[in-house]
Length: 402
Image (cartoon, rainbow, N blue to C red; front, side, top):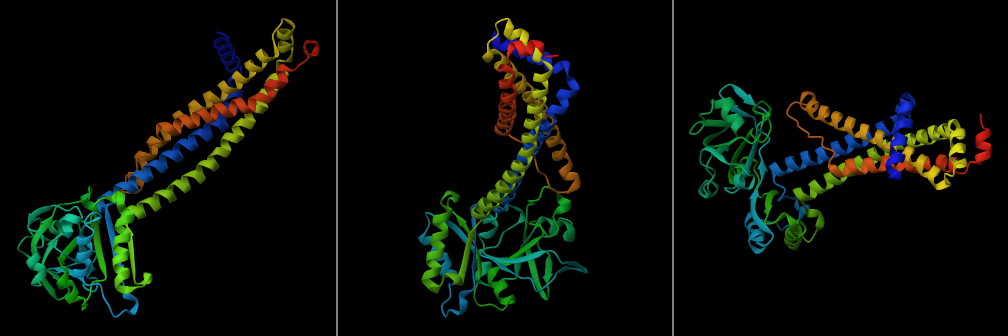
């Protein structure tokens, strides 16, 4: 009952000085609001990055080979064998050769942002594509160097009005027959130019011929289980080292590795910004200490009367500590509410500022609880010294105080 009575008394004292209390809580409110928004932004960015990587395949690896002048080369068959021999870690592989020296044309229209890639028959499934029309690339297309291709949804709509299968498309001087159209990946059809839905996939053997290359220097590999990314990466690296005997002859990196690095970077930035925002909480604590010292001075006679009537030091101490903690707790609650409001506003504003982008700014329960706990803790810590001063007042001198 003592705690409840003390809490009610603290609320009455706070309410009797509303403007002063609000100004005192301002630092706490700003600090908690900033922490809520920053943590929410960090969570939103982390989720957005994870969603982006998920669409590309977190379980994928990219292998780049430049050889460093070695007389030996990792052939396509050798790379296929690496996957077969490490089936517990590796699932599929495809050469990935970009044809960048020619512009895509259909009639009189140039599609300068359309990417043209040489891949094998497994690539579209590896990249999580589905066919909307026609068929995908086949083994015989690769083996017989057929000039056929599969195109993305954007190009199919823009160049062929959705009726592309069986038509021809030119890549520089080379003419390809369209055998399939991929289903769209992008959620916004107006933001697909140059994206994943604006691509052409041709047999990698044809891409090698067009690029006048007799070796493949880039591969996409799918892992059997992303939880064993390190083992999968090591398996590929060991096999390549056996060929080149030089770590600088190749580079292997996984999407999960990049995702982890980006998440670490985001977490570090959020931590730094949170620490900066925490300065406001420190300022708020100093404000609470200052106002409690003023309150002790104003209520010196009241304290003297209570002590003369038998109030113990710990009772006086407890009263002022509860009052300081209540003040900071109210500031923390207001900061949480304001933080959620700003987070919702920012979530709605991001698509308006950056069309096609969407970031859900969500602080999370743990961030809210920690922010509230810190705000209350700051009030108690910074309110302790004024409370101790009040508890140690000499009752006789306090009664004489005017």
